[in-house]
Image 1 (cartoon, rainbow, N blue to C red):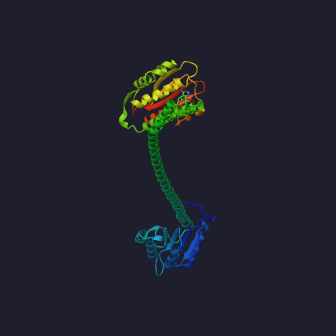
Image 2 (image 1 turned 90 degrees about the vertical axis):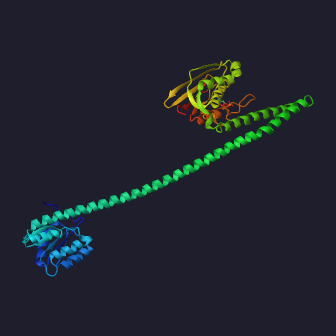
Length: 405
Ligand code: ADP
């Protein structure tokens, strides 16, 4: 076996040569100098042990026969120290007897070289051990680097975990906060609209009384002012009424949920708005609608609000409204399509807000709560609602309801 020497001297390894005879050391040195490694020479076991205290060696060449501490004793000391336990030892000896060899192998010898030493054999054997040691050192380095990376990763991981936990806690906190403020808002809307109704009614009644009693005794302006008061009190009553309605939607518990036929809900809705349908001459056509888990009163309200809008926001044509549905994966998709004035797509989202209207308010205009109520009903049924439309093109309101409620 032959290994390439290390002429560039990069990452030189140390080899310890131990022999009590200086001439032997010189010839060992001469044989090994071509390997390009660092050669350290010791003339006794003790001296060798001293070197081994401070330095790392790739291999030790150890003469067996030395005065004071012989090669075997030295090897025993080397093996007893954790720092030097793994270093390969090559014994140099003149004896070929078996007992000798066994003792050496027992002490961890990796090889024996018999005197007279053949320089080429010595060089190639040492080169193998040096190469092994170099590979080992590299492996150790790589293992260390890997361990370091793994440690860093684990840190990083802990940081990610910590941040995640933080984030989760914050999301939870924010959700709780939002729910709290939502509930508070809801309660406020409920209480405010409830409590406002009474004084409003009083204002309205007294204004009407005033109008009746002083009829003819007031000048034109006076009559008009009273008319304003009555009209605006009525309007405010309607707003408050609708706001109360809106805030009541979520208050109804799940007890009101049952298997509900959307066909029936739609029939009821048409029944409720019969005068408007008749007066407008609206033509309402329909396909079969599904049965869903829902709140029948609210679903009727949903159809009613959408149908009223389809008639209210008609153009000069007779209102034609078509109601239909289809299965869409694990939900039902339903829609109300009309041939009315349509909606500019830029307002497609806005119209679902509270008190949002697109037309200038007049005496007959609504409170702008109709679609907000629709959205609340649909989201209470775990669905979504949206509109697809363009100005002058009619409007189609879509909504979904999960099949499994
Ligand atoms: P309201 O009808 O009381 O004004 P809604 O919340 O029901 O309030 O509707 C909000 C606005 O959306 C309406 O003022 C109207 O401008 C527009 N809109 C609703 N439905 C339709 C429709 N089918 N066609 C055209 N515009 C509509």
